[in-house]
Length: 93
Image (tube, rainbow, N blue to C red; front, side):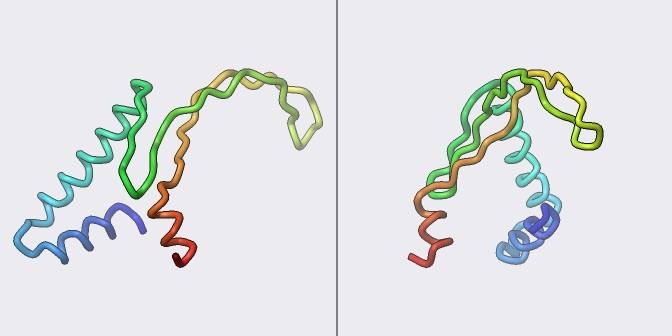
């Protein structure tokens, strides 16, 4: 599902809301999650999961095409851990 499909589904299920308002709500939620994660905070949506940021240390990698050693810089990557309710529904419980 892409963002526009999410907006359309929410708008269809809530006919009292204008689509532009639903789009603004969805965009605000995503922006707040991004803002919290960029400041190092953890975002937890009960029953769905938790978004956090993990730090990957600098390391020596290998260029797969040439086999040459390459220095890979330290970086921060997003991490998602599923909630129990989501895991249970995915596994048919």
